[in-house]
Image 1 (cartoon, rainbow, N blue to C red):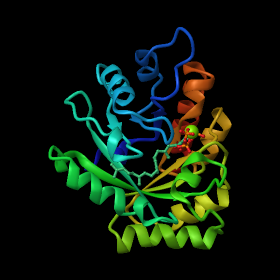
Image 2: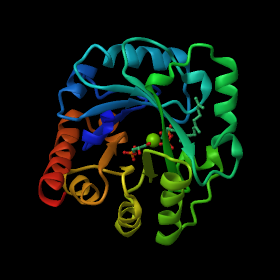
Image 3: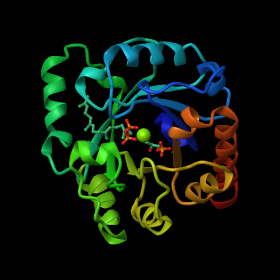
Length: 237
Ligand SMILES: CC(C)=CCC/C(C)=C/CC/C(C)=C/CC/C(C)=C/COP(=O)(O)OP(=O)(O)O
Ligand SMILES: O=P(O)(O)OC[C@@H](O)CO
Ligand SMILES: [Mg+2]
């Protein structure tokens, strides 16, 4: 069974951002979250990625690199694996297969035994990831469900990721993606900032992803979102 089948909650750390003053990666690992993803769209470098992966990898929690470009992939035995985005609604094929082909051409050390993909559906047109990938975010619930179904059944994706980075998403849209999936795991990320927003999104998604909050508010706020995710899982699923 894949690691993520048991995850209710992920903290996503952006190596281009800082933690709250006085907090450490150990504090983040101790929030009760199930895993740490390391990635961000803008300002990514190999050095920044390596620093955060090394720091997180010392703690007893799964750590996955989520690269936004081939140059931000680092190899180490400090982390558990790689979650490589494939953007279903990208306007530029580079973010579906192009960057992937270039990465594979350039990198002789890819460890396929711990490399997996995430089928992104990018929904917030204001997010850097939307402009970066020229995503068409003008999608209704039927469109999103169809992308999710295509991801699982045509492309064989094990993770579908409804991405509202920076804003809280539409629950009807998240529910539509959840309803259509058979076995794939649904990740939801975007705007989760407290117990209630976490619980609401976790009632639909299998796994919620909390990003900006860890950088802006810190670990106490993240801990509340872990509670929300765990309570939703205990009552709904
Ligand atoms: C093939 C390889 C190794 C890389 C390419 C992988 C792809 C397709 C990346 C596309 C962009 C993407 C989905 C990046 C994942 C990380 C992500 C969504 C971070 C959040 O981004 P924002 O919140 O928009 O950005 P900032 O917080 O940096 O402004
Ligand atoms: O930063 P936020 O809005 O929490 O979004 C989390 C994650 O989905 C970003 O890739
Ligand atoms: Mg962000």
